[in-house]
Length: 143
Image 1 (cartoon, helix red, strand yellow):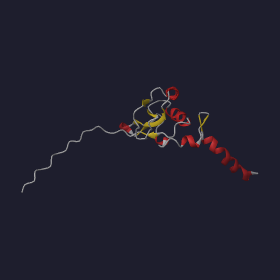
Image 2: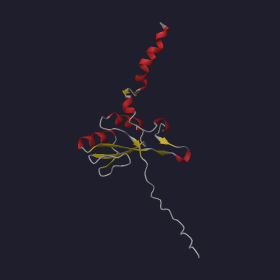
Image 3: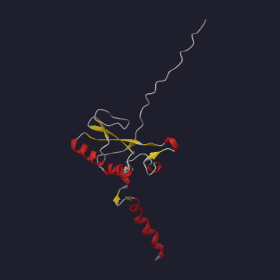
Image 4: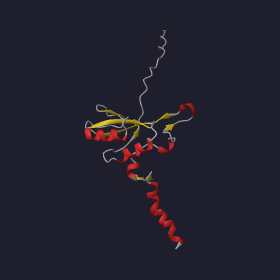
């Protein structure tokens, strides 16, 4: 009978792994999050020492007031950008949403968003730098 114990473990292990705080999260929902959650600290921060920072993420939602209300109920601090595709490539019938992990419940927020059927993926946001690069002029060519 002991030879069947690993089999039982193989059957129930995916359910144990998929549960977080009593809420089941399917592998397909978890796969929507394209960045590695294990890189974030318990406080939702990346980096070390003085270089700690939160991670910003983006996703698309249908351009619909009920959907916006549902997203805002999960996280009232998510920013909506109706006229921007973002790097993720939202369509014209979608709103770009940007959130970050600077919340005590950052993991629960991300998992709740990933469970929503209309969110296809959640990607890390990479903001463009607005630093002005000053270049020296080329020296004049002399003949």
